[in-house]
Image (cartoon, rainbow, N blue to C red):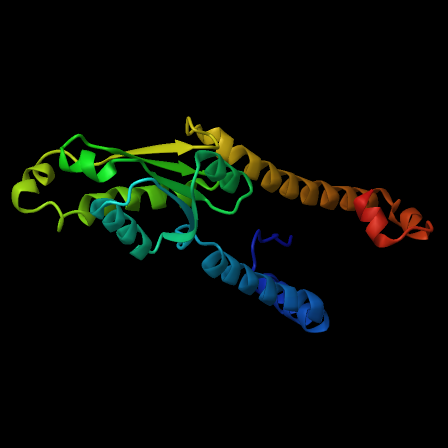
Length: 233
């Protein structure tokens, strides 16, 4: 009586050789096996940037003191913010954000330099579009560090006490989209596209397989429809 072996290396190797022969005959499939991973590596490795720089920024400057100009120059020299225009009113700043011309609006209030020298911790308002949470969070994080270092040269001598305690400037961030920073609002919209794409591909593959198993694939092929119409239907 011949005993059946659960796994045999010879049978496994025969299948491997058969698949290589099949790939030599089917050049399109072989090209997809090589090309698709390479394209994905390029897209995921280089096209997707989780730390974007040179984000378009508008400035609402209501104080032309030395400290205000120093702070703006430090922000301009950073790699995260790129000043694209200067606005003069709050309404104009709102319109710039609404039209998507700028991702941030930096608002330096009146008497900023005077209040800073008095030790009153003036507040700088940063209005952020916030539809891209990764870009917004990194830029705001760099802005906090930048503000702490930008005025070190100005706050010397009699003003050195202002730099010794808490931050001499208060940073206020107003996010237009999802100000409560609810994670679901950022993840679910993109996740819906991914889930629908994967589900539709899987359902389409199962439907075609079912048609072949039931022997009704020939009926579909004999109908006056295009392959694309069959796949979509």
